[in-house]
Image (cartoon, rainbow, N blue to C red; front, side, top):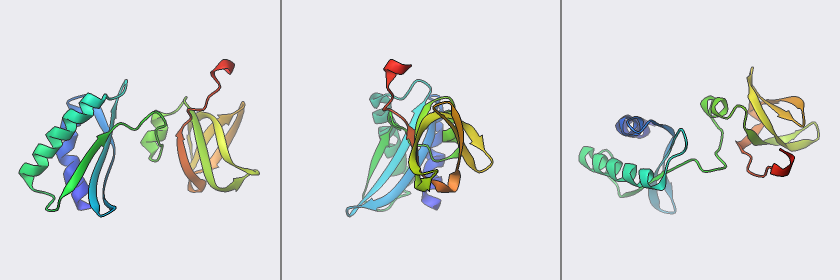
Length: 155
């Protein structure tokens, strides 16, 4: 979508100057309102104050550039603790972390897999679940997120 690329080119320098990265940009109508949602992060996490500052700067730039000619709302946020993994770069970032992967249909009798993300294979996501290496086909992955439901007493 052309508008998203224009917004990315405007916000990227602001995010980079704070050693951050843009994880996702969406621009869509929700409940009758247009929402511009930008998900950003940086090493060690991004604060609410940084998100608010980025929101103000982007709002000022968009007003000046007049890219969006309808009324809209800007939301700048972090990916959250249970960060979604969608792109290759998300999975590469999460290697070595505990993940929860849900598949569209059962594989080997189940569709929820919990384990340590080992990496990406050829069109697969590789996890270690209870010490067993599993290759989950990417096209079968309905959702992948960091797993917050870890029993830390076993670590």
